[in-house]
Length: 429
Image (tube, rainbow, N blue to C red; front, side, top):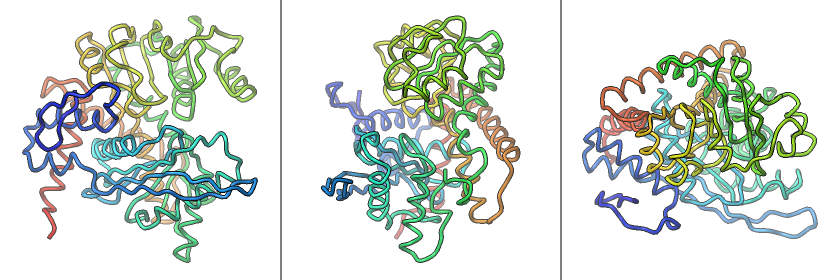
């Protein structure tokens, strides 16, 4: 049930009217109740600090002009510059971007980064655009949000359907507007433009580091564990490969068109070749096709949701067979599903911890850009593993202290840190 952000009273709303920001605020209040957070602080932290919506024209290859809608939201700049990705997707909404910016605030706080949370998005299906049209869209969107971003203000990064090339266009556009090169305005850039070693694999690798810590406390054997990965993009494909390298058996993966399942284990190298050739994992000869919803319910020990939000709900949480869930995606599980999974003894590594590897290495990239001093991939991965390990121990001890599941524990840790920043800084003027 949604919660009024001012009164904290339950608000009855049809399920179809409940947006992702309602979910984020509900999660916030659950953790705030555990903390005993005062009402004034709840009002501050349950709102986004800045929200910008832009409608901008883009010239298409045929000479026509189309108008696209984009957003950039900064949830809280108290801890430092805001940080968050930019996604290109046909279903982007302001409510979604607001939720993701709030989660970014907690995520940065959970792993101890000096960032607040932000997020951006454009409502577009980038698969329907040419490379030239994609560049035109990126440059115009960047120009429209340029007053909000900067290396000491708000630092974008890749997200769904964006990549290092998009970040290169963003960095160049911003740099042209200010008159000099500013590599620190974005992260996830190509290496030659100041990107960081290890950044492309960071989200998936950080998720696997989190899984390694979780199996220790659950007394699980990775080499005897079957893994299912929903989403075979950057995070999911990297997580699947690294889990296989650790000895786990990856039995199913999926993309937006559907999934592929083989109880004996998938040949990931051959599957990569199949996807590169056909554009999808479906119809791979080494397995049987399944839907994305069927994939979530397959027999396995470890489930990695690495696709979109809202995948695990009250409708299917009771049928999930995994013992451990590691959220490589943002917002894949609803609050109702959290309760069901916890009551069933399923151990869940929440998104604001499990997929924090991406923003952590983005922080490393930002530091390298400011210092103009690159690190090696080994240094990056070692630092990432230390942060993920330390953060797991902090969240797990919080879960035990308050007798709550790991999502609420992570939120408690993140919210308490941001609340402390807010109290110390006070209210201006």
